[in-house]
Length: 374
Ligand code: NAD
Ligand code: TYD
Image (tube, rainbow, N blue to C red; front, side, top):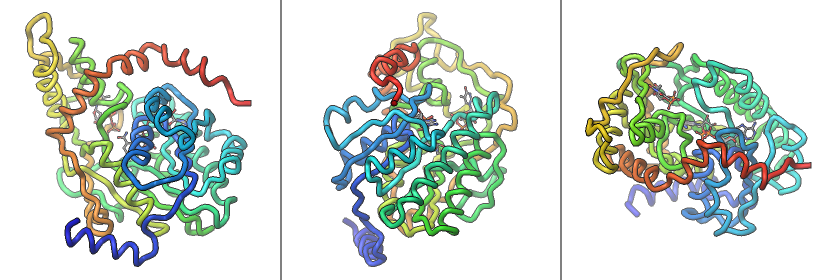
């Protein structure tokens, strides 16, 4: 441990906030992309000794098979509850049945394009669902040690060519998705300021890595490139996102959860800004290198197809994560050069998972294995 990290550890311990001893952590949306990576991270890579209760409605984006290995390895320390955060009674029941003392709230409708077409679910799940969780958390009184809300940098709106989002940036969401996440952030903070709920919030930039549903930019491009399908780039592809490996996001959440002060907010980012068109070209060249060539022999870049732009498309996101680095000693362990290649390799060797989420086969599997809770 470096001298500086040791100092951070002592500092946090002195504050009395580091390593809260949770026993029963409720993870909402744990069958999704980040939630499933988070559960694996906590059980495999931290000193947590308690139980994780994964509360997930298994929408199109949730796949319990992403946690088959976890269920097999951790036995009673991992519990799956098939239920919906829009259902206040189901939420209440889970809090009391499992004696919940910590919540990490991932469950959300998360895709901007879907929010443009049908915003209703975003309001119900992201706002009403969060409210239901806050109400049940509040009813736990002092037994509730932490409510961590996982949010996005999109609540801050869009940047021009310069500047960064930080914890003090005013909220200015543009899409129904980001507006619903902003509303949920405000509710979470209000429950701290009004009722003293021990909340923390992280606002993170775009994630990539294993188990991401192939409607988001990176997995969609990997799979289409592999299969020789068109690569739909919105507009000129000049919009900029800041990319972070999902494992680094999970480590940041755990750090904030266990070490940050009640009521605090942290921005999480990868210091890896890229134009969409450059992301797609990088993916193409990695797929060209790792996968069999296209039948035509053409480079995958030739599949790039510029399509109509997204409505209200935010131009640029970029995060200043220095507070998290300075206060809590978090550092990202991946970078885009190795992270993108690792991710392509993961998709190439997990085509069974991909086929199951795309074919609807896994939905039948869910129906067989998780009939509706009574
Ligand atoms: P995802 O869409 O992959 O997964 C969402 C999960 O929530 C799924 O398992 C789904 O079944 C579940 N869910 C949806 N509605 C539910 C409901 N009503 N009740 C119970 N469960 C429900 O999302 P993700 O990419 O893993 O994102 C997780 C969280 O992180 C979201 O809150 C999102 O806003 C936030 N976030 C995501 C990113 C990113 O790049 N993906 C970046 C920053 C923040
Ligand atoms: P996405 O992965 O949907 O994340 P977000 O909208 O939350 O940032 O999209 C990332 C960027 O890629 C965004 O600027 C929109 C763009 N994009 C495309 O150009 N083509 C696509 O097919 C998708 C899904 C996204």
